[in-house]
Image 1 (tube, rainbow, N blue to C red):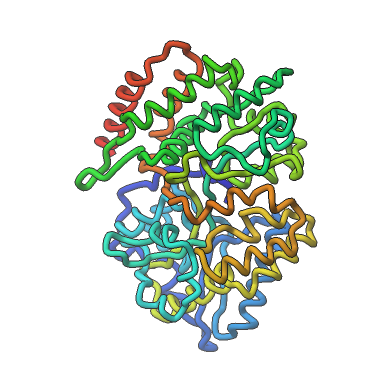
Image 2 (cartoon, helix red, strand yellow):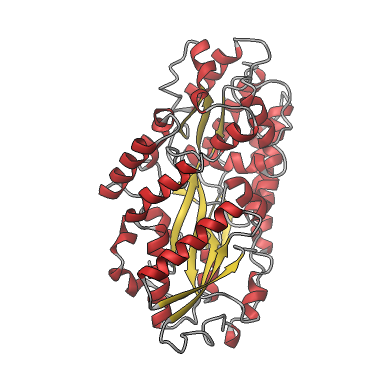
Length: 454
């Protein structure tokens, strides 16, 4: 799932469902058929309206069952709906293998809805090739594993290569610090003609989402543990300096333009039109810009998040019903490894993408950037370059830094927190004399009230 769809769909899990005997799911009645096969109910089947993805999904199930005749996959349409998840658990409707967003595993583990798969992982060494910070999303405080990460996104700096060249900047060496972003934005804005050097989205919780990514990039945090709960952690000099840099770009340099109540879609429209130099984004913005906003892969570049002390990550994975039998857990891990963490299948998927004229060579499916440094990552990158139909060099700065930048997931109660941080971003960019320190103090007080009431 793209970060845009992820943020729109994401809501907090409804608290209060009772585990008890309700956590029956599909497992208890459907452990195996009369023929001795292990029956495995999974969700994640694409809707019938998405014919390409449904065709691929069904073909992969057929290929898997041919290779594993003792496992019978029973697919269910749909992914994660946080608003109905606990209701489905209480009603015994949770599948044996179920899709989750990165923000959900901690609560699912705490509620006892997912099986502990730690002792089964030794039989699936491929999972160890996935980046450890992604595995940590599915671990409890003792490091026990309750799920498998299958895809992720992280934030970087998306930029217009043509505008870089016109401004005398090196398009193969994008800025790597916020100070360099400011300098480059000023140079690009000097081109005139309505061109802005740098852009921010600021409405509908996207300003808070971007600010979170940027706070992470400087090594800061939005929230930190406080006993059994959380407290805000962003009212500090590091965040103040970051916001003062944005404030200076807006009011002193005039490199961001005057319209600052904008959506992320507004930024893509401007980038596609060749009127914007840079903005913070995930890799999925690249194909969206090309498909929908008249951008071109030749003109777009992606670099690491400025400062690079950490980056916001989101993503998805699968967990296994806590009521699953040992045989079902093993079957589930066999399926997840085969479909998502399978070096042998990657080239076939790349070829399928290319045959359907979909982009190959970006840090996203069919080659998601989930691999740790090592042979599999090297092999995947080599396959990507061999079959690429987009300029791989234009995203190389992002990829070269990817394994060196720690990933951090969204803060608890993310959407409520983002709504508060929207007001901070908006004030800094729309009010010339806004008091950054006062804005942060007030926002931290509001976020702490959110955490105290949760």
